[in-house]
Image (cartoon, rainbow, N blue to C red; front, side, top):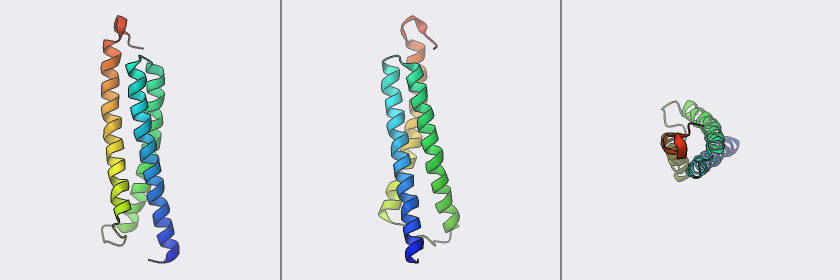
Length: 113
């Protein structure tokens, strides 16, 4: 792998990590807001999480396309870490959506705001 290609590879991984971390943080913030019955804020945070996951997923797809299943890209600890972050962020986002819906249904007065 040439030096330029290696730097691009590292940039893609770092962007994937940053966006996955942002998605995770937004989803957890959404849960905290829903716990306080701030469903509008929670929905905005879930939207932000989704946006970050879309960006991270595009980076992941770029890596998969570059590798094309042939082992062209090195499997580094940082790459594995980034993939783990993305997978966890996606799981947290899905669970947060479900838990927020439960909060909404059990809100005082049965609020479905």
